[in-house]
Image (tube, rainbow, N blue to C red; front, side, top):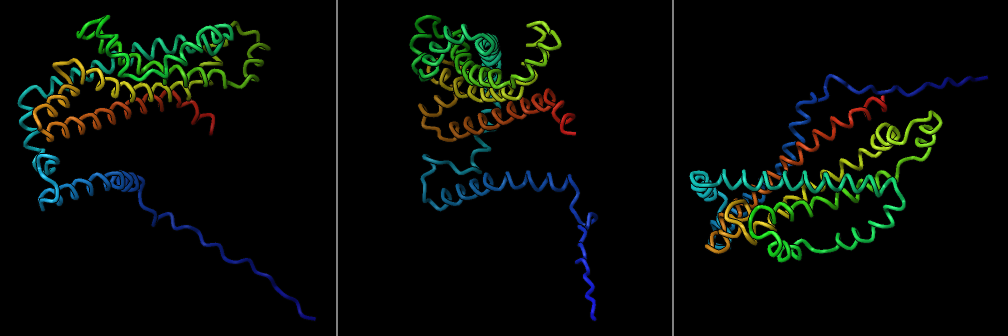
Length: 276
């Protein structure tokens, strides 16, 4: 009588020592993100240098550096500063008001019935439609530009906050009521922390949209700012200035979004504790 001996297949353990270090993985990840922009720059350089596209339509990337140096010797930093403080002031005003109304609408059914139809209609109005009215009411000074940016920052924060508050698990509210927490304690200790991921997502979207509305404001009536650079480059047939302004917008938008992401991770650090 023969007996069969079953053996388990040998398990191959991953070689931990051969894995690349974390800082090298982060570097590789960042290099992957730079691949497409670098390829686009090289392609633009080739097509312009070979005469496939005229320089007055698309300047060679190598020639943009000289244009950037010329602008930096002038008022470039003033334009950057002007647009940046307009964006952040409009963002603070618009998103701040949005949080107030969103908390009211999200927690009160009667407030939602009164306000939600009007806000839904106003949200559908394009940004450019506000400009003539704001110019008539507030003139061409800073007030009209800040107001337009605030309008752009209002609705992403409002929409996301209302949705986040209304999506809070009702069981959490019931637990708070069992422990006899007062109404404002429930809001501060239960509702807002539970809704904070959605609220912060709305704030990030509002900040991104603030840059878009800033360009709309500065293209119409401005003597300073990145939007003014775009308009000036178009009127003087300087595509290099237009492209530099677009690159600046991309860089500033990325920096502001990264800063907002850092704040978001810090405020939501409690999620890592919960996961552990």
